[in-house]
Length: 224
Image 1 (cartoon, rainbow, N blue to C red):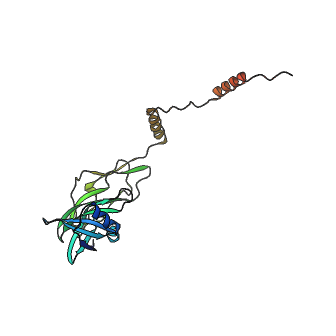
Image 2: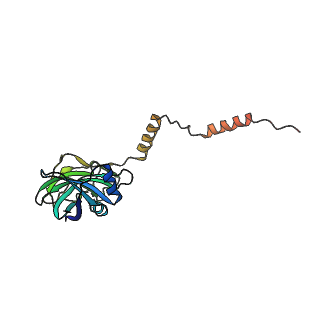
Image 3: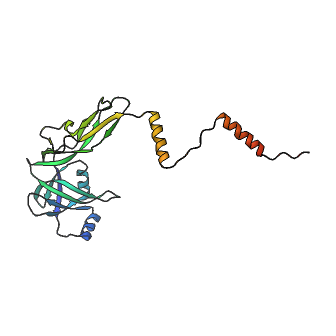
């Protein structure tokens, strides 16, 4: 993955007020950690940084007042409503360094007819060289039949990448689709649990009885 060049600035103002002023100016406060050095407080350009971080595990080439740093975003804080970036924690890395990252999993392929594919994991942890991190990994369910399960160990990894998490974790489960009768039974059980009661369906006999009762209850016409 090619590093994305970002021009950053060192900052000396801290606190909520300073952070709000930066965001108002379209900038993002950040802190660069790693390799035993003192944390470096930075200001990043908002638009360029947001575009760069659209890619998972994007490698950033930070130009901080003429000094270059390779970095990965370790924690990105976003506004819960508007989703803009409020703050970023960055980790310094070097070419050739092995790092552990979480990589998104994308399901591909068409399973066998009449099955349901359930994705149990959306990411897996892998270890790879810092400048060759996979942006995503594909998990094929092509032709998968009911009863198929795919574990983390079954995920195909690019050369130079190894699994860092539990290899026995289930990534995908493939099960048979429920029949109409099973769906109706589950719905009835759920309605019974919450106390929903439906009127019994009318039969020809009950309909005739209701019609007779209505006729007997109706007032007789006045005689001329």
